[in-house]
Each structure stands twice: as structure tokens, then as C-alpha cells.
Length: 396
Image (tube, rainbow, N blue to C red; front, side, top):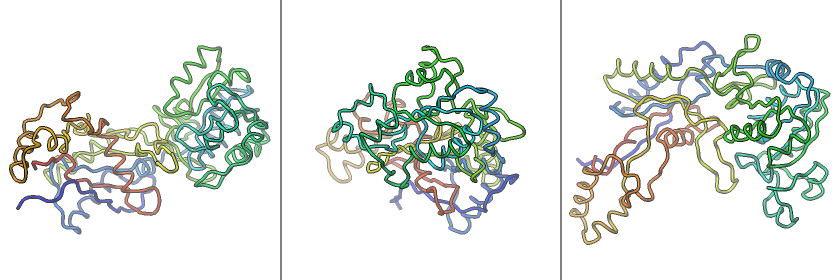
């Protein structure tokens, strides 16, 4: 009988992961158990994705605010530290800021506006127009910002992040001056020592700061890029991708993930005879149209994946073929014509009209987003995602 189902995505439950657990064995056992209990077969080109959180937990990749403070102190000494462009997040940045504050003598906190890098708003953009404020040219003090816009709580968290972040710094007896600007050079009017906290624009920001007189210029991927007094660390991303574990500790983005995915793939091959693709995923790369938040607070969607997940989709648009190439056909004749076209499609469809409207994103970003939406960020308890039929098309 002809198949009537395409891609199937299953969130798989597994034991609660603790430091020292053998994550590769747990993932493989969870997939095999789910297959047995739920009655599905494991096939070639199926995909197993594993959230970065449980990989990092198994690795014990944690650090405390004291570790952060020690690294900040070693890099900036007694200088006033410009902390620029942090995202507005209790989970992602508040604990990091505690560590920064504990290692500094004075902080100038420069916030982007009307929103942070990932879309969390300090103020509605329409209010900027009403007040005649240009976020690309105007620098505001905290008093000026309050005079224009008053006190605003985040739509989802109910937090006034200006007060919240300032209070965190001041808890440690550290002076904190808050300014608002989208121009990296603004901070150099206050200090030449800067820790820039943006994620995806950090390389541009650092280049601008260094080219305009910055002296001690670091980004979050330079903090805890090596172990401090036995702490966890991440050579590539430092504190980027970290999130809150406790009030005194952060979980870092996992390290050395390539051996993890390669080992899971090899174990599944050994136990099933099938070649299954595997990836570790973090935040999905999608945007909320209502809250305007871009989900990607991690430095990458996937820190590691097996070779079969490299590249981008190579697909044609079925409705384009039906409306254009085969507009005169109907029913079974149309189906056969489209199937034949798909079977003979070129290996690289970039630039062809038949591929317009297909998603020109990397497979790992698409699959990571699918996985993140499946596992969620709360209590679903499914940190492993099993995907079937992703590489199928209309002819399969």
C-alpha cells in the first residue's frame, strides 16, 4: 500500500541525566526501548537529536559566579568595565552578570534599545517615533530613558530589566551606570575596557571597539574559555550558550560534542544495522511573531552532528510544478508527472524557479528548530527526539 505519512517526530523520554552518566549509552538505550514499546522500526536516514542540556549535564560542565568573577578580574583588574549589549534574560544572563559584578570595581552597563539582540523589548518601537528618539543615533542616560518611556515590564516575564540588572550589580557594592545606545563606540566614551555580551554580532562589535581605541576588549566567549580553578569551560564559546543552574552556578554549553554524536551513531549501527544520523541541538532558530523574540540565544543551533546532516535541502516546490510545468494535468497523470520530475531533479537547484519558496536554511538549523519545538523548554521530559521520514519526498 502507498505510504500516506511523511515526516514523523517523536519526543523520547529518558532517565534524568546527572554528572558522570554515559550519555551515549543512555540515548541509544532510550531509542531502542521507545522503538520496542511504541512499535516503530528504526531505518536508515532516521535522525536522533539530543538536547545540549543533557550532554552538558553528563559532562558536568558547570561554573560558579566565583569562577566567572575570577576570570573577569584577571582580564580587567581594577578598570571600569563596560558591559555592552547583554540580552534581557533571567535564565541566560542574570547569573552571568552576578559573576561579572563580583569581579569588577565599577560597571557601565550599555543596553541596546528598543530591544536586545534576540528581540526582548525594553520599550515599544512605536514609542520611539512618538518621542522623536532615533535608536541608531541617540544615546540616552538612565534618567533620559525614564523621562521618555517611564517604567516598562517585559511582556512575558513581568520584569523591569533596567532595575533588575542594576540591582544585581549593586548587590555586590559595585557602582553601576546604565546607558542606552546601539553604537558600540559609545561605550569608549566611558571606558576602554569592554566586555561585549552580544551573541551573533560579537565579532563585528569587537572589531569596531578595537579599531576605535578600545584597549581591553573581550566577549563572553573569552570568559571561561579555559578552566578556572577546576571549573567547567568551553574552548569555543566560553559563557555563550550558558544558562542558570542555581543562584550561584551556570551550566555551560557542552564541550567535545562530535565524539558524542559519532559514538551514538556507531552504537546504533552496531545494535540495529541501520545508519542513523545524530545531532546535538540547542535553541531553535525561529522567531515568535507576537512577542518578537528570536529564539536563538545559543551561539549555534547545533554544536555537533554526523556528516549526513551537512548541507541544505534540495527541494522543488510542488505547487509551482502543479501551477506551471504541469498546469494542464490532473489526478494520477499529474501525480506521475511530478514524481518523474522529482526523481530526475538536479543535485543543485539553487537559482531555479522550481525551487523558489523552499526553505534555504541549513539542515541542522531546520532539524534543530523542529527538535526544540518538540522537546520544549519546560516539563515535557523528552530531551531526545527521534525523527523519521525527514529526507523522504513525494515519490517515496
